[in-house]
Length: 155
Image (cartoon, rainbow, N blue to C red; front, top):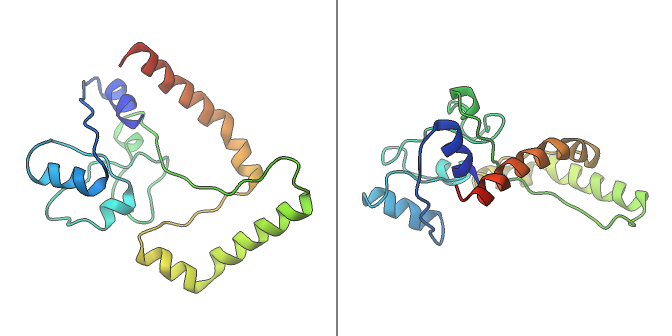
């Protein structure tokens, strides 16, 4: 989906080549079989910086793992596609249980041992409350609708 946004924003045609994972993609790039790859910031953070050069991050803001690497948006390209994880429950789960779960997440994020393990694995930590996450959904849904329209067009 990021590739479709980049094609539209940059006015270029790209060819998607599927790989079984980041290591296969990096091998193809370093072997000269392809000219560019998409990695998440954590995958790039653990790569040999002398072997490849990152061009942009596709998140809305710079990652703490690559603070010197500008976003695509900062470089004039309307491309936003980041990888996020969340914790969800069914709607009928009582509020007191949801609050306890949120407190447990807060406690885990504040745990120095957890923070050290996340840093060792190049996993940036960020937390949004359920209310903040829900408030951000309409804008994300609009962006995904635009991307899905590109897919339907056969771009």
